[in-house]
Image (tube, rainbow, N blue to C red; front, top):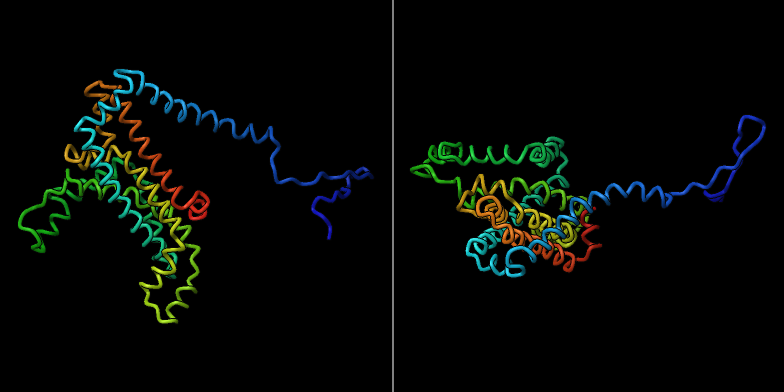
Length: 302
């Protein structure tokens, strides 16, 4: 068998031949550095430098390291941390469960219109701005909105419910935003499930629920954990949705940071609170990698 690196003569059109160089699948070092350099500069300027500056300011401005004590001793900050973690955890569960259901539907259905509908549901939130999405939810949850109108018409309630500016409104709005991310994290794992395994389990007497729990869930576990980490880490940084749908009733960490900067001009405490938020996000990522391993997560994400 001829090697791929064998040089062979190629006609030059002048009665002579010249040898071709072996084809290589790796880029030369200079070319690779040239292509990666812009990305490295962008990361250094817009990610690494701001983070270093933020951490430095949090321990040098105001009371120095005492800024963290001031932040953690503040009732507003502690309440915001509790609300943020609780709502983000609820959103994580709802988004991952919904994303898994959508991914499983896409994996098992043979109807083209169902697949088109699922993909439309996944892509539609990406085509809408965050303000537009929250405005749509504000219309749905208003006292005169379609939800209250339907409940009144069927007699489920006697007077309109106060759905706006509640934790429920915030969770619904955040879940709608995060559902596509959960789906995209879970779908690669779900798409690789061999359906013949389920058929074999049913043939041996297992119920659909037992077959799904005993076969599918272990196979898609890396994707589920990756989806949970992505959704939770992104959810704790939400700002617009809690402000528009939750108001003062649902303070998130990001809203407290914004108030410290623009209302109270307390930049040192805002910097310390921002670092606390960053530590929570990084801890979530570290725990996820520790639980399943980076290789398993990369495999689950395709």
